[in-house]
Length: 541
Image (cartoon, rainbow, N blue to C red; front, top):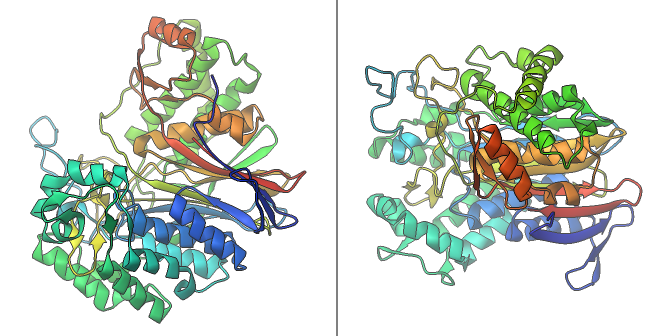
């Protein structure tokens, strides 16, 4: 039942700097591992072999992924978060927030509502008004400045080569252009870059982005991303927004800053968790795990369907709080301390126990919105440094608009705001939208042992929650924790159940009152270090 669908069997002897790969059995001198995107991981691995640390490697991998995984992320994407644990014995980590920022003209009432308070039509999911200030490059620069050992001019070189020389179009990339063809065709820059004479790209054809290569080369020459935000490139981006009716200005670009923030911690079962704080999805994960900790969930029989019911109720309670109360804490009154308190966890744990005893779901709702996409990268080096980094366009090709002449596809961060003016996640000048990314690092005895994150939009927090519940709560290996089945919920009574769950669990949940449907959960990419052997195992499912 519990089987890893995709395993990158990369075993790295951290102490001796020797990699043993079961993909052919060869031994080669390497000094860590990177996982999460094939071309990105390969480029990051080369940086480690050249003497770089995990931060250098993961930034390299992210820049390559931003060129190659065009539908999912890019340097024009709306950004994300990362968590970095420097090597050494401590429980210390930093988080970097490079989420998109709304332009100064954004206002809480910018989405039209009808008399019932419902959005007329839809929030702008696509088009130039769906895009805010891109944060990815600022985040990469800040990570290098704070914790890297190599300059931007060096780590960006693999991305430049992929953009200039090209790469084969995958079936997924080709299918994404087919599905988005109508909207891509309406935007001149997107049509020129992402369609072939108006037709979707063909799988196996070679995709090149010379304009993006030139942009990255300019940044490499300057050894800085500053020109993207405050130079000629920034003005070209702002001009494109103005011409096409977007909102971002040169002043918005110049004002943008990635920022170092404190990770959210949780101690449970002898391990220490650090995850990305608001506006990332980590608070939801920590809140739900805190409920399990209050329940003593790890002592419950894992084969008893009621144990699964407790896990579902913990998630649903955290999602109910998420959708009602969370937003950018620098612009809204968010009760984060209360939501993460032991008292709140105890109250929700008591509700969950009552629901299980009475064989019913707790009252909770969702907002019915969906979100997909995203790339996650995890890395470790021989110094014990670990990094978890998640970045995205949002859904496929993000806003589905491109800055012509720069090859810059833009994410749709503005679509991640809530349209209700009185909601904590309503838009506002300079505000950052709530998103689902949850890069996380776990410590054991003061040393980082696990870096993980997910790809799959709104499914990410739940997937990370399930893996951590098993890895931390039950103290099983990352491979087994990631292989274990998952359930996705956003607070209502609809449960998307991983096909790995026993049919008896699904039958029990239906009897309790849930609508249970089979379906995919987010993919988790992780790197685990075994402190006793020094081996590093990269696992994904």
